[in-house]
Image 1 (cartoon, one colour):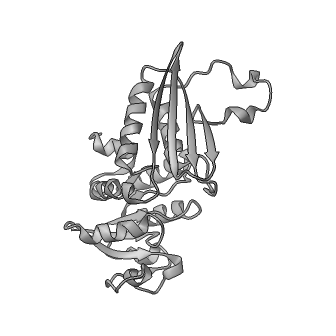
Image 2 (image 1 turned 90 degrees about the horizontal axis):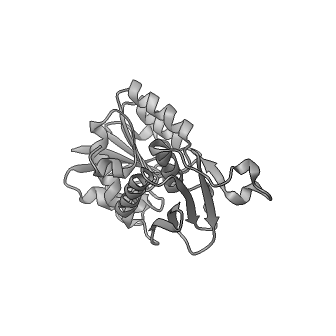
Length: 265
């Protein structure tokens, strides 16, 4: 039995994870973290009956007897939450966006030092994982690429975790090529997007999107578009998150991308 703590249990994805963990035969929901509901029972906090699962205000309070901490909180606390769990010898599944490549390097070093597994993905949807795997395959042969990141008008972080992870992992395959160097551009350089791990990323923030990520590959007289669109519910992220929960205790250090787990890397 894997004992789980959900940080961000009353948030958008956390609300879907709680019942999924309760229904799983091999998982046990040990605790939850939500500052707004601290001191209550997670069932009551979610508008139902008490489940005997306490809600704490901080991750440090909720790690007793926990094997894996799931983080779906916010960009301003996720790094501290992950490092706290590692310090307590607890494996981590990170679904929160906003961490940088430097943050992940620090997390990986801490996890390796503590012999703890961390699985992080910008998107735990199974179809998003397949889109990322396809993009990594295409990048072996197609040097020209750019990423377009779509999200709701109010999303605070840019790019999304999905797009940022994609750009960073594409860089591990090969550097992106550009037709004209950015320093030779006429007009506002910002119009060419932000350079993330060597790939130009364009973040669109308008109503009507949840999170959509598109990578455009090009060669003379042809293009390849690989795109993932998320719907309006958190359900697509549940199955992938639970796959990571079951795998994280078996790993040491940082593993990035649900596709890495699905493809057996």
